[in-house]
Structure formats: structure tokens, C-alpha cells
Amino acid sequence: MAIAIAGVLVLLDRFGGFSTGWPRFIDAMLKIQYAIAEFDLDCAGMQLDCTKDALSREQTAALIARCKKLVLQVKIIVIDETRKWDHEFKDVLSKLDQAAQKKALSVSEKSSKQQ
Image (tube, rainbow, N blue to C red):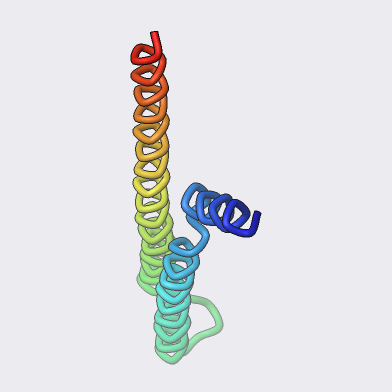
């Protein structure tokens, strides 16, 4: 019984990608935190350049460009992680399909030998 439960848990983990997904999640989170920290420091540097209460056109353009860079960095991280997850998920489905086909073939061969 315990072996069956362990087998089900291993299959569930492979199907859900929990043990491999966690390190990828942490990696993506650290990359996003790095991008945000870099953004915060860049913005702090831009604030030092502001001598007036209002931003100049160039300063506003630089700030918008920096915001765009942050958004694109985060999107790239999310897209990369989603692709990795998708590849892993499809790989697990393929392996499950192959195992099911082998099982069906084995059952078919046993049936034909018994007849």
C-alpha cells in the first residue's frame, strides 16, 4: 500500500512539476527582484539629477524609458519561465502517453497469446 501511495505521489509530482518548478520559481523571483532593485537605484539616480520640482522633457523621457525597460525585463522572465514549464509539462505528458501505449500494447500481446 505504501509503495502504491509513493508511486502515485511521484507521478503527481512529475505531472505537476512541483519539485522542479520550485527552483525555477525561486530563480524567476530572484531575477525579478534584481530588476526591481536595479530600477529603484536608477530612479534614485534620476532624482538626484532633478534640480527643479518639475521634470524636464528629457528627464521624463528617460524615466519612461527606464520604466519600459523594467516592464520588458519582467515580461521576458515570465515568458522564459512559462516556456520552461510548458516544455516540462509536454515532456511529462509525452512520457505518460508512451507508458500508456506500452501498457496497451502489452495487454494486447497478452490477449493475442492467450487466444
